[in-house]
Amino acid sequence: MYLLSIECTTRQTGIAILKDKQILGKKIWMSKDAGREILPAIDKLIKKVHVLPGDFDYFIISSGPGSWTGIRLGLALAYGLATANERKVFGISSIDAIAYSIAGKGPVGVFLPSIGKSVHCGFFEEPEQLSKQHGFFSTCCVDNITLMLKNAKIVAGPDEKILSLFKDSGKILVNIFPNPVLNAILALERIKNSVSPLNQPYYEK
Image 1 (cartoon, helix red, strand yellow):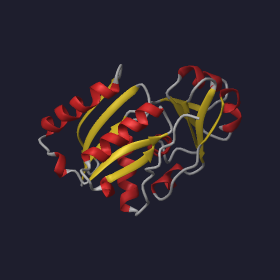
Image 2: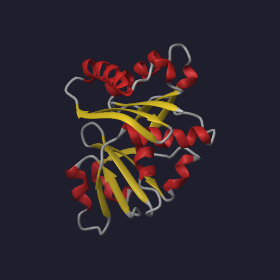
Image 3: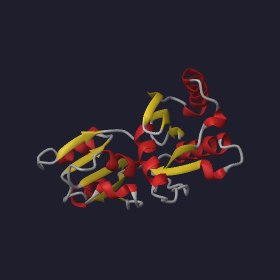
Image 4: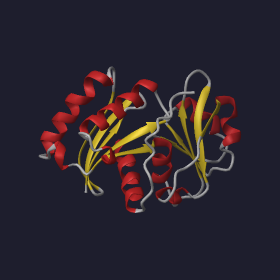
């Protein structure tokens, strides 16, 4: 199964091409203008790994939470590349994907910064179950993040300042951005388990 995964919900943009769980190629960069950069990057990567747009079984996209512009861009690209076959578009929450990548090490808390003093976060007692079901996340004030994730053994997210709020908690802290490879791996497991895609966008709130 060939997958093209697009992640542009934060300032770190990424694309990846996988055959099942094998990474054929990827590109991850801090974007200045994802709208202008991402399509040429996809074209270059497709040519590099010698596949055609019609070869892809699924186009994986992060449906949020994250930037309004980035989510709209990613969805538009995925639906455009799917060429009228909307069933090929498979949306994933990047919070779920990050949590699933740390599965098997205990309860996990994942956060993504939002606008102002808001932060998106999710707590996962058994993140390995995310291959069979969608996770739950919410938006809260950053001042409440330590309370929201108090039962997590591991806290993961892409902001050092927020991670520093947990520095004396004894938790394992992981600095990690949403990633197209992580999204694709979780999507692949959900496709195998007949879990429906999460194609409804979740914008900044």
